[in-house]
Length: 249
Ligand SMILES: [Zn+2]
Image (cartoon, rainbow, N blue to C red; front, side, top):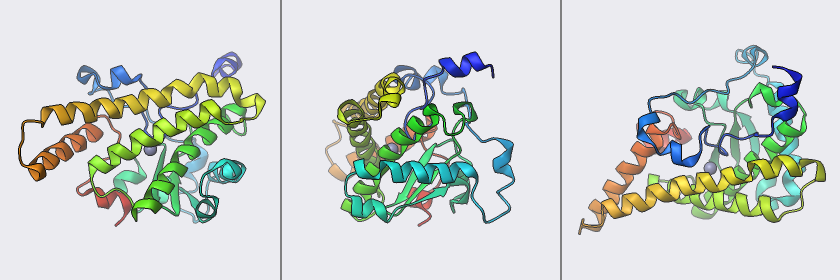
């Protein structure tokens, strides 16, 4: 990677906690669904930690970013009880090796993946990356705490994402951010709306496609099946049997 490229790079996120590297309209284009999402799997340094009980340095940087963000997070007492963990330590095998950049597992655990090494270490790009990603996960922490646990259905998960991406966008637009972060934040802000719209469009389409079904339970069942397929096809969730398995439950 040339120095020039690093200086020019301002896109830090590939869609919040969901590893999508394309604009929302293309994410929904089925003709592209066979293309795999590029992984942001980490530098060789991380490999060395897999057999140990120690955490790679990026996990420590994520924890520091969480502490820095704490004054701006909602429900601070709740947030103080959150532990940031390395996603490789997640109990579900497919989750461990998935492309997801972050995964809120409960109201006390947020798992993170090594960010794209091109962001650098302790750079403004990396700091903004953590800031946006962790704020979004903090919203899931609030959602899980409010509803007594992680989503039990794909429909609830879709709803959580729509709200979390919408609120992350709102916060990015209105909160006081350190001046040196501003340009990178502005470059990434639209991705939050694009992700929100990706989820919104799918929900609207699922509701339209099932509107003719009279039986409420059957309608919900078909919508949930659709959401499951959508999330798997777009690699917004890793392979799994039951949704609860992804939370190690
Ligand atoms: Zn999310």
